[in-house]
Image (tube, rainbow, N blue to C red; front, side, top):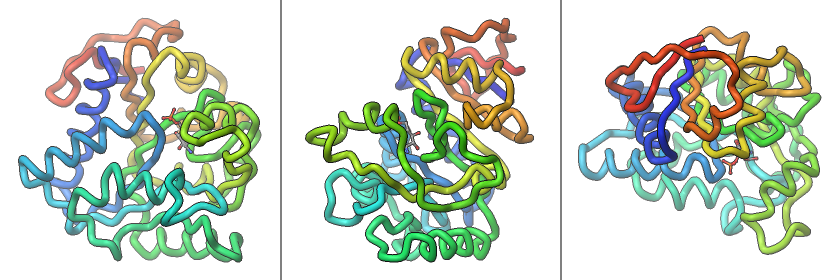
Length: 260
Ligand code: GLP
């Protein structure tokens, strides 16, 4: 696991966008797994800037989003579909047919999830998966207790996630209780993973992810078992790490970079 500790949310966003850019430059037909949440907004903003000002070309990129609220979709201001289009897809040249987001409006969630797994396999698997992290260590919407062999499926959200995400809704009652989410196994099958975290609220989850036991009670801890994971975290999110991390600056990590 490579840990990149940066000074600020802005540095985290730029660092992550540069790694995504490098991956696209290396492989124009990149299969890119995408995440939502407040954490990712700055990275999308920087990728849009790279597209508009530097000509970063997304025309070959195939995207798969991690999750969607069950019951929400296009036309719902709080759906992840809307988030992705407003923050990213409407401003870059990803081909609409290459965009995949679980269909939260489906009448057959199980079949939709099976088809999603098949679409990922048909695309050749995910080359690079971007992740955020919940305060309870969830990745995607894989809540504590999720088995590590889980694949894309309908899930129930925990109270902690409903409370954390209510800020995006008019009231707590309006936060959907269920979602469709890639599973832990789906995520772990990605060839490379980048996880972003910002702020003190994520510090406990990050400490457990890096230094805690691998347990399904903290889903993100499974990442210790993946061969190619980079955490890009700001100082606040890193504040409960106990280990001493070696400073190791690189061109793509403007802050302190360290490796465990
Ligand atoms: C949601 C998403 C996760 C995301 C998490 C963190 O629950 N399903 O994929 O990682 O929120 O969100 P934020 O970045 O807003 O803290």
